[in-house]
Length: 227
Image 1 (cartoon, rainbow, N blue to C red):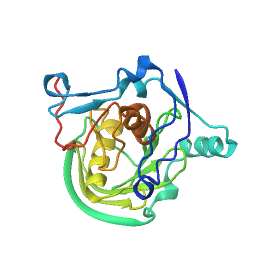
Image 2: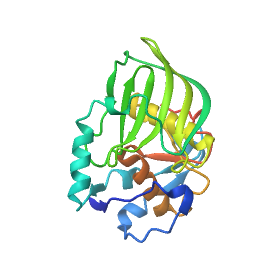
Image 3: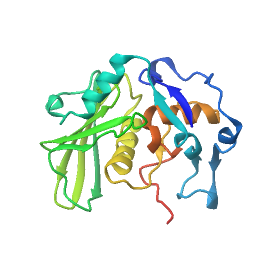
Image 4: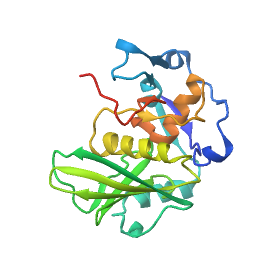
């Protein structure tokens, strides 16, 4: 178990990645690697960050951050209804997901620990994807919902946090698969993500916490898990 302080990745698009200075034990760093071909559990090449994601523990010495986190995980998300992300950009995106059971208004995913970086709320056919530490609304996703399907129509995203339409579409797809559907999924790596293994692992943990197991720069939306 390794303690990791709060890392602010929100300005990544503007500042670009830095080489991480944190010292990671060899038994973890040696397991961080790219998987290709039959080594990959998906039909694309992926970066395997499982050892890092499952070893990190998020901590904060700032009582305001802890208080805000606890307040956010107790929220039903109504404060986000009809709100839009800061520095808003919009993109049409059509994709449909099968549901095992229908969703109802209210929280559909709430962070259960500080290593889970997102809260997701459903209100009136909009999904509000919110950072669990800060309460920042990063995505508003317009959907059509039935008893057994969720269809995305449009995505609004925070352009100061997300660098491109393509990054937004891939990130929303990943969050729906990994957080809402609890399905194996590949997180997207933006073009300006770190290039070294520890840097990639830290980026994934900052963005997706314990659910950021695998990542790729390829087409993650169509990635298929090999059972």
